[in-house]
Length: 262
Image (cartoon, rainbow, N blue to C red; front, top):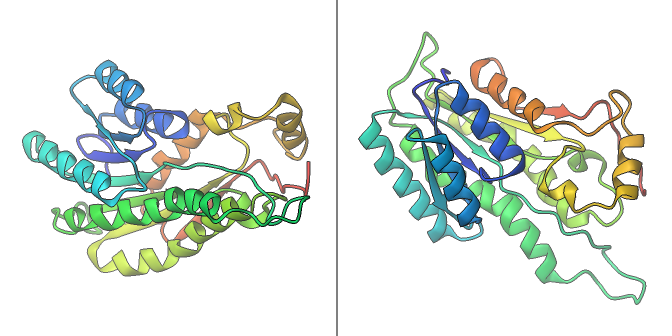
């Protein structure tokens, strides 16, 4: 799949890994549709990128909000003539909490719903609404490819720590749906790839204390540091360009296996 002169929908595109991805693809000639809840940041980024970028204020936990962003994106595609090349479902949250606390109170269902609605439901909702526009695009290249869906899981999907029940459940589900999604979309020439990063510099890790971040870095084998957003963006780029990447989860983690507790 080519990057230049194709449109890529990126949720969570106004910060962190999503923003790094948007900038990387844009620098290679892509048109980027940025979906994010942060209207001020999103609008500013789109303006700085210029005419090949468009921002849509989007709450991925709301079906109507996603629908409006998808509709706006495809109206933009019709005006530019630059077909959809892929979707990067990058919006995500983390809200730690033990399944039962020291007072023997269970984890609130509201906190569980908050994480699942954004990380899992929001990912699936974005994909299901974007795919009908991708299946009707003209196939490209000798394989007749129409696009690629890229999702973001986490190393927590495989070795989540204490207090990560909701987060690990949401990311584990994303990892699990990768292969069936690829199988569903194979007849249309659309691939599905999931990237599972470990500790990366992002808005989520910025909220960690220095002690917590250092403990996680100590669990890295090599290199012993947090990943950089640009390194994540390079993996997205390769997932777009390498047609043999399909139905798989790529661990991007410096051989890190998280301990049970910090």
